[in-house]
Length: 124
Image (cartoon, rainbow, N blue to C red; front, side, top):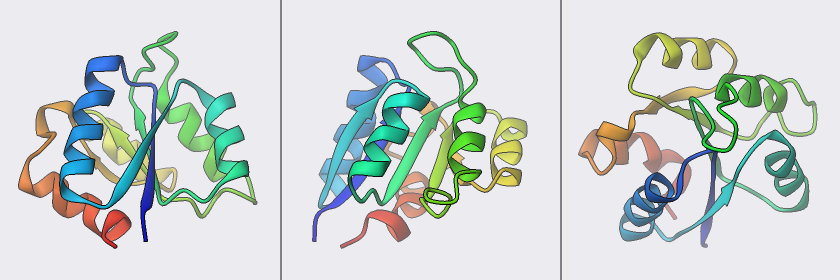
């Protein structure tokens, strides 16, 4: 069964790096969203196996932690797994405290450790 990852808030090159990493290691579709509104709308329309959120959104530099808080506080969406994309441990810890799973940084895209973090959500 094909899995679905939604990547929120990354610029084109970073989105493409994540998409390439995921599609080359998992039977998964990677969709791009740009902020809270289109991410929530997508989550209400289809099943999603994992959402990755950039620490600072490319579109308007909004704090990605706010998107995690919004989705995790929504009773209909709170069980959707989420990860923050940041190289900074303190922001990862904050995301985990909000209900996300410990994520990965852009410098870790393609690393075996990152693939291990994605596997529970994207392995068929």
